[in-house]
Length: 232
Image (cartoon, rainbow, N blue to C red; front, side, top):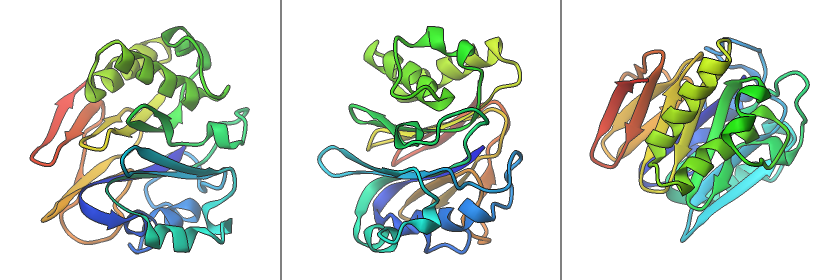
């Protein structure tokens, strides 16, 4: 499995997802508290944020091993952030092209889980990497090109892939700079509304009150004005 987190709201540094909270993604890379499958996320990490266009930074090393990360996470600020740490599915490549976030146009996407590649290969024409997550991302992006919105694209891919692979775990987290969409399908997801925005994360980044669990097999959509949960 993996862990991921996102922010939408007033401009914040990437450190707000990574090393400022007591249980941010840096801590979750080696000591996750609610991860159902796997105990460590050391097979790479990535971050995405928005300037005029989305910017992406990915490494195929553990988050704690990148000496450049603390300074970068402190300096980079945006109103929309996404970051992930990776625990590679057995047999999947450990390389930057297999590491979230995947991107297409203004969309950034992370996959927390696993799925048989045969369940998603016919949902997309090609993928950036041979890994299952890259094929999931490609399927979502292809639906975006066909005109579906962010949440609609996630929902369609998750439901179709889940029907083909009943054992799949398909927690997706995506953003476009103005909204966040996420699915819960096999692992945990939480959101926390603050006075200046909304956090979404695989597990709470701290022990402060306000974190709400998203039910299994649900779609979460977040805008500046609204947080909505609906069944998949």
